[in-house]
Each structure stands twice: as C-alpha cells, then as structure tokens.
Image (cartoon, rainbow, N blue to C red; front, side, top):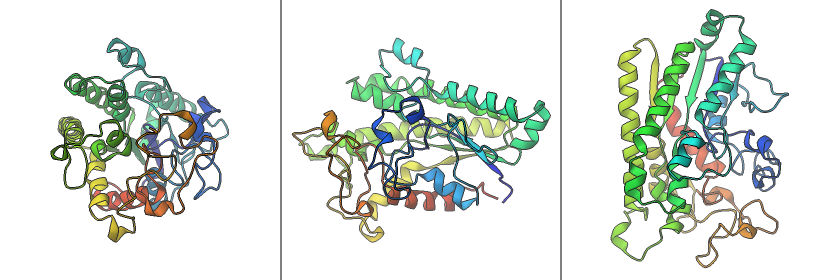
Length: 337
C-alpha cells in the first residue's frame, strides 16, 4: 500500500494513551482495561485493541503512539485522539450549558497538535505536502461526546438536535485544514447507533415497547445519530466536489455496529448478555455511574469471556466487537491502496 502513516483525530473510540497522560489516575489507566491483548492498561478504552489498531495492522504499520507520549515513535503517524474529547471547544459547550469535565483537548486542540507535529518533522510546507500525500487521515469518530454530555445532563433532545449543524461544521473545518496542509486521503467516521449503546439503554430505560426497534435499541436515539450522520455525509459531499483530487470517504460505524447486533449469535456473541457490559455491573438498581462499580475501580467484576459481549464497560465496545467492525469497514472503505 502507498499509505506510510496514519494521523488519527478523535475520542475514546480511538485514543491509544493520550487521556491517561493528561489524567494518570484515570480508571482507564488500570486493569482490566487492556487485559486481553496487552495484559496491561495502555489507555485504550477497551479490554484490548481498537478499530484504529486493526486499521494499522491491515496497512502493515505499527500501532500509533499517542501524541502526548514524549518517547513515542511518530515515523508512521500519530494518534491525537483523547478519550472524552468533543468536536466543539469546551468554551463553546459552556455557552450552551453543556459541561465538559474530562478533557479540554477538543478537535481544534488536536488540530493544533497536528500542526505542531508537522512543524517538527518538515522543514517547509512543500516537504509536509509530500509526506501527507502518503498518509491517511482518520477524522474521527468525533462529536459523539458533545451529544453524550448533553444527553447525560438531561438536555431535551430538541435542543441537542440544534447543536448538530455546529458539530458538523467544525468537523468540516478540520477536514479543510488538513487538506490545505496536504492531506489527500481522509476517512470520516459517523456516529454509532447510540440507541443500542448500553449506557443510553440504561439512561432512558422505559416500559413502552413501541419505543424500541427489533434489536431492542431506542428508536429516537438512533434517529438522532442518523441525523448527525446524514449531515456529516452532506458536508463530505460538499468537500468532495470542492477538492476533486482528494479522497474523502465516509465510514459507516452506525451500520457496522447494527450488523453485529443483528448477526450476533453467528458472530459468537451470547445473545442474552451481548449488551450487558463485560466490566462493571449493569443491575438496574445500581447504575454504573456509582464510582465503586465502574470498570477499572477496585473490586469491580469482569465477565468470564469478553468475546461473548459486544459491550465492554457500558460506553465502549470489546476488542472482539471492534475487530469485527474493523473487518467490515476495511472491506467497505475504498481508500486503502
């Protein structure tokens, strides 16, 4: 393949160790995070590998070191993603009364890191352009946390819909910036079917069966994620017609995860427990937000076989789920060669 480096922007779906360098006492810096593959925590928010790790393997590149690892080897790319990162700057979220409590390293901060990194490796912009011609940019998934925060703070969904155009515009801006620096291949992932995510199923649990679809996901939340994704795809279309010599490809995380849930049994997941988190309890009377039963805290139970679970810790997926998603996406994303 002609791809010699990957530059990843995003949040906990792709962070390989930035957040735990900002917050060394974080639960993501403790076992059982990382237990399956590395046998130690690395700052990945799962039991093992993430989709970005499978993408790098597929391209025969080494795993991406996090930007904040000062001893990192960045010859094959850099991971700028930070768990908890939002698309919008935290100062903008505050004006909407959306509190961001975990990290200030939002998309524009990550973009500044990228520019600093380029300044450190290229003598002038034309050299950078040559380097980026052989690179892949993973622009996201990002934006999910802007919505996660708003939902978990009890904002009405009507209000949250109003933030979507802004979130999508900031992603558009970031894509234009990397193109102007010389990027020629960009993958832009959409949001997950959040109505199928354990944390949301718990937050909005209801006895009204008509609010759930055939996969037992919350319809209104999936409709919201689809709205974000359709706006994102509109923007990709606009950019693609503006920059015809650049490939900008949408990655359908929504569909990939829905397919896993649909074909769970044949993929080796346990139909009954696949949505129960492998780590941390999921009993209705003990919501996972109580710190003593959150994954990574002392004395928290971990399931026997993480491969039977789609969900790792209520919010993030297991290595097995990410692996299958990555395989589906590698087949469908037309950008690798």
